[in-house]
Image (cartoon, rainbow, N blue to C red; front, top):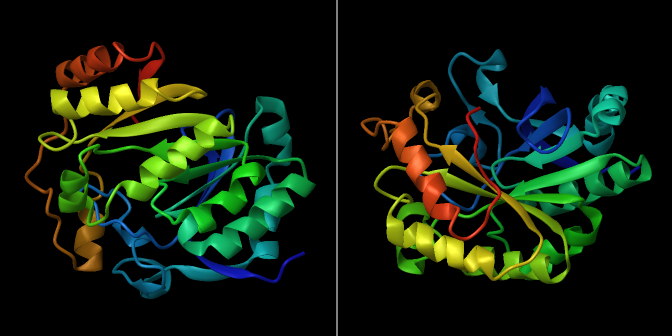
Length: 259
């Protein structure tokens, strides 16, 4: 087994919102984007960092592939019964591409279903090697206008769109995750642009609409960072249903996901 190490900040067992069936979700640290609505701000920096009120007051821990596989394999019976598996999330798990690659290899050896929750904001030469090793992609798609994408996330969406096209061309299973952020992603123009782009692709199994929530506020305080979204209210059920209605013009399988 690979001796490659990586930095993780959480492992969530019995997850039911991170792909089919009952899953174990492994959260890797590091993300190139700085979305102000991020509900896992502790994931953004790749390295362990201080956080108040946490065990040892540090978030992030170095683990080997063997360490993680030991945790994953504890739940194999539940994966088999529910057609579940393991999901690698973050942050952006491809920020630790070598570690992720090694974990995917070990899961394939054990015939464990894998999903990667990704922004796709990674150069294709880093992204492409994991494509055929991954069963399902949970793919974040936020803003189609590149200047707006840069304004709100700090990154261009060039790689995001390019890598999504590649997944589609290769016939990979894809679930689009669209964060509904009031005043930012939920404009009719943006929804139309996202919908038209998605409708040009194949193998998009569904679109999951993820309403903005405020549960991360305490995390920002514990990290001693400013929460730039603290005054933004979550979208109402009415506005979520309107976003769903607009997306239904482009694809039939649209779901509102409240975790």
